[in-house]
Image 1 (cartoon, rainbow, N blue to C red):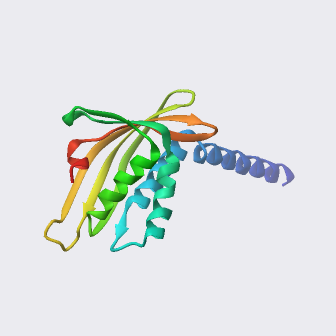
Image 2: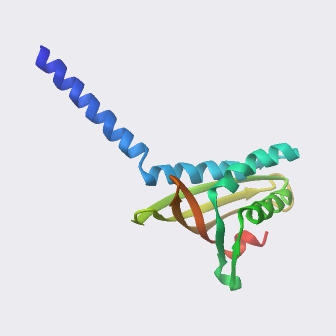
Image 3: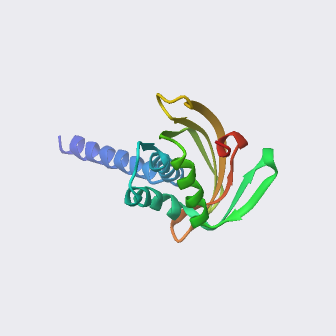
Length: 165
């Protein structure tokens, strides 16, 4: 009886350790961060400036001090600071009556220590029950680097259709 109990405890501890290693792996941390950012970008109706600031804070903290933004269809290539990125996002959100952003099929690769590559489908739905309603899905890509135990976006490759709205 005592051996069975010890074996059960060991199996349970190994299971918990495996789950914790998976949950706190770089891939899972990055996926959860991108999912949370998508929620921050979404909005339902009018927002106060304080609400906007609170929603954009996690986005600003996720952007590297110099983030390279590329829109291949426009030949656009610029290095932006986090404040300018959040300013653009605030303007984009302000043009929509309501906005829902979801990142689907997030694929994370860690090619080397401290570097990450993310590819996802950005599903954007805006202006429900409005004449300018749209529901689109676009492929987005990001390059990340780990700095001081935090993953930061250093490069974003976005489609033209996503940035022109």
